[in-house]
Length: 42
Image (cartoon, rainbow, N blue to C red; front, top):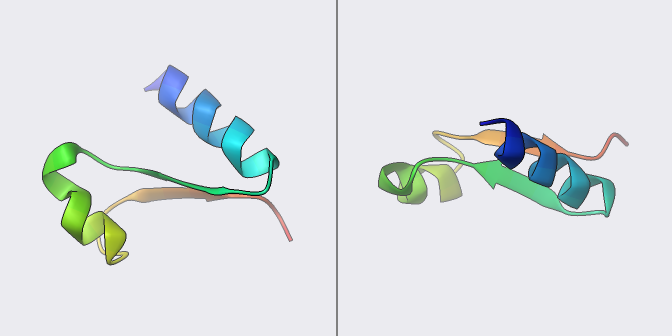
């Protein structure tokens, strides 16, 4: 999990929003129902 979180943090710091979810949870993740989201602080 560590490399995914590190990549997500780098992406968020560049202005993006990273979503971490399993492939089985892609549809619920895109609906905001099952995932970990990492965003830059406002």
